[in-house]
Length: 244
Image (cartoon, rainbow, N blue to C red; front, top):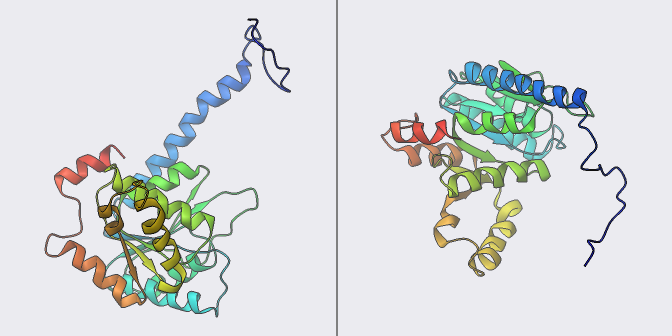
């Protein structure tokens, strides 16, 4: 039977030559990507222990979530943790603002977007990324914990990213903490009623997530996880993170 042919808009013939200019530009792009990783590693390796923090960019000052997040940023900084956010507005700004008042560094990993994200004014250390994937690695690489406030697609993306990395042991196990029972409870119920019920995750996977309601509970959960062992990775964990 003759192979069915499709006339796809923009499709290329196998005989059509490759655009050398485009190929060259794609190849050289690797150096820009390398530069983002190098700068991130050099500037963030010194901020440990740190907590990576996520939440909605759309929440305004005066909102209860904003006030709660600012308090959390301060408590984490006061406890000795650098606070790392996406560097933008909303709950990212609130976390940086709280940390800025504390004793530990307030860090923003800003991303360049088509509709330019404006860096908030409460950052001791500011990095700017073109590539989401390089930025994602920096959130994970030196984090002693992940704290997830209420948020939209971007927040959920980071939440599922760290869940996947820890579940598959591509990252060391760190506390993954959701703040706000009322906001998150239905999602966690769906995990149990759908994912677990259909055998798509294990019972143990549900224990990767901790649900709390107060900033002090976040700090306590992190200290409980590490106990007396310290926050820095063990040699075995270092080996895992090297392959992240």
